[in-house]
Image (spheres, rainbow, N blue to C red):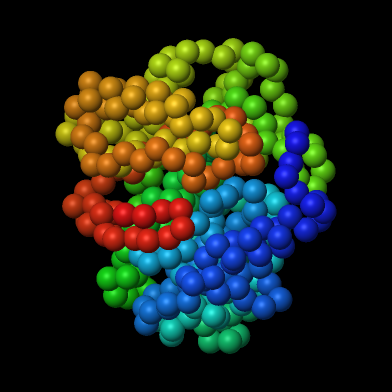
Length: 329
């Protein structure tokens, strides 16, 4: 796979330099670590997110008003270091507490937890909500073991709005956890992404194969099968999502159809068309629909569908204004 890069070892450093040229009026780059924070910080609960590079525009793209206050960026598909997370948290802390929000992966859990321990010695109060929206990665009775994928966007959106409203740390945690508990996602892989520093694909699929439920790093899904028509594929994925989320006629949802890197917007809107028809047929109301590339894996082919089951409380925070480089409301 061809890549527009210089030295493969410098891709994260040079990417961050490019980000700062683009958003220098809004962002501040922390010295000596791969951390970025908002310039215009407020006296409120601070939201910190982060994860490995290679999933752009996550995670830096959701740093902004009504969203995250800072981001800790790791190497490609690798968790940010504890020191990076620690420095980002200190930089955004206003003594109201810091909430960590990130996808539930072993490396991220280890490093964010280690950073929390280090911050405790510096009297910085932290707590964590791990995003666990991938319905294929563990059964419902083990939801805490599930991976976090594009549902990160919903959870960060709700958390950022709650913090912006001036809620206490405990109140922000409660509504953020509620958003996570009400978020359900499933993905499908058509082709792999490529790791920039090695040129190696993240997984392999035959030309006529797809994998239902495969994770964004190539983690096993629920079934490897032949390529099928868009409507049939969407039907399969939505059947699993609706079953997991217990949606029924009269339920209300926000929808995100997320591209994984190389799948075109034309294809994503064809999927979204079928999602809309299925929900309409089942009497499930759509509060909002979003079709975009938020959580990618380089040039991976495929997409994910996320549903946020909303009530009046969650709709209030979902609808609140937000402004970041890659997310606006």
